[in-house]
Image 1 (cartoon, rainbow, N blue to C red):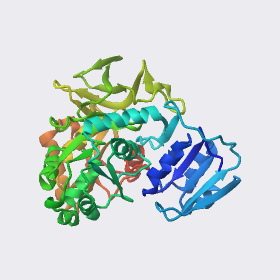
Image 2: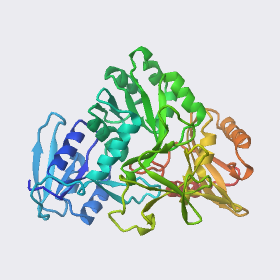
Image 3: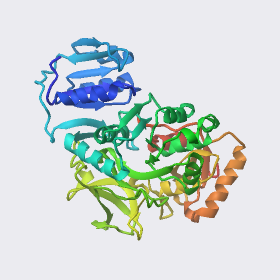
Image 4: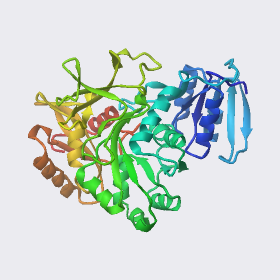
Length: 457
């Protein structure tokens, strides 16, 4: 179809065995893959297709018609063993290139970031960045050809693409791909396939602890699970310990992002520290304190990283994110005396209460100790006296919400400074989320304000 070296391929498909095959096919001819969420709305897809040149478009049947609007295309429909039907659209307005083996410096993936603003940045990752990131993953997780990983995270995201898929391929292991995470099917999938490790997020840990059907399917005698790798935010000690004791495995917590082609830090295999995201792995990590990049700083500041797997620029201009060879993550954190990194929140999410600065992630971590809380997101809402009020927006288990509200207040009083304690508490069914499932805090704040939440609500 005249797609070759340097051409960009837009891919909007759900998880399946096709994904790694398709990825490799695109790379083999030197083309660049841009995977996006399978539930991407047609209008959003059309905006992206119009803004950038894609020689080929591979989408599910629900988007085929929308992908052809205002463009001349030819189509090839394939019958494969890895997917029922695959249709490739060729945009005839794009000239295309001859297929060629890519160099290490060539782009391999374009990924949209999963930031909290709802407006993603486009990250271009070269083959070299991906290979280096995967190499660090393999070494730090002690992956071997004897390992089998279960992919439950979406394959349009860096976690599944590099942490699970590419690292396993390069270490010679085996991959089991699920369409999506299912609590009731998780343990049978692990046990039936001899899975030795899996990468998840804290929400999945919480679900596996709370879901009775999931717990009922767990059989310790059939599990070969060495560890569960968990990232996004730190788990409370109680839930981490409960999971490890219930399912007889260990949780390895780390810290990474799309811009670093996977992880930057990981808790050492034999020396984890609960609450931290571990120690640097193949990465220089510094804390920006008074404009200086300070390694192992005990003061809280913005986390900055650099290394052989870290981008030096976005595909679109965002110069404020880079300084003196460092990538500024936008996350706040500090190192303890033993060199473990602790992430305390997002720079833009900090709440100012009468001049005191409150990190939402810290408050969320303390409130998450309560067993009835499925998820909690802390935001700032306007307050006439203090400027902002700490507001906890909670998704909880069914129960007496008045009793739950009082439990939240009691927990906050026990564990948080007065200015950190939620002044307002709201229970909701779900949050506004971006394509990767992360909470879009500005939209959540708008929704909360639209509901007219008042003091003490």
